[in-house]
Image (cartoon, rainbow, N blue to C red; front, side, top):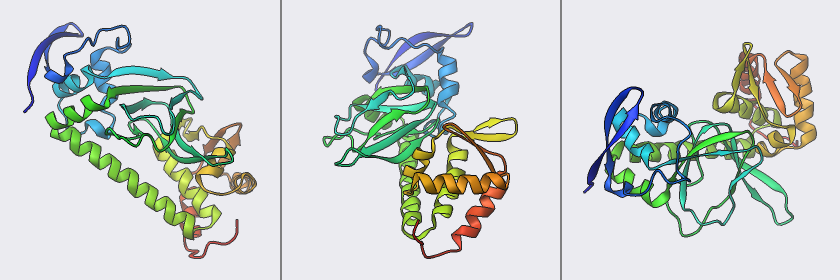
Length: 273
């Protein structure tokens, strides 16, 4: 059973009544939780995410009332591997990489999170985080206490369904990438990854799509070498498909890149990279 209490909130010039769940009986106006974005703007940001799909605006206000905003600078850590899972993090702007480190200290990128995606687990876990998360662009997040988020999910079934759907899609993407690592050529893996990144975190600039990643990060994502990424990028650049700058890849012809991915996918045996 979920209980509510009323709270008045200013949204524009209108005074609205927001039903806050009893789990929100807390000082949401404490110095650490003061929002830098107005409630209606927070809702607009949040509703771009599949997490809030099909959730009415008053319910969005309720759910967001117990979240706080936090901005992260480029290269700033969000959480570390083995840290206890105490928060649920929704990325609303920027880009975050989730990674693990090998025994010799080498970094391996597991996935990239773009605006609208959850960063890390969505539920409490006694085993801690399985990866570290770091902003690779200036990023804005909405953060909930993990226990409160679980109780919110019980109060709002759509929130629970959306969370499960997002995690299922994350698993499907990981499975696809694993299959590509096992069977596809380096060119196929790289072209498919760039297509995913263009959709996930690409920025439209003068009719082209900008992806802010270094060659080293692309190499980690596709389990290939920096040299191979540079070689393929140079080949595609000659064909007018991409243009590379420092830590930026500009996709000039998305259709041609999709053709490359389709042609390369016909190879069923992965050659040496």
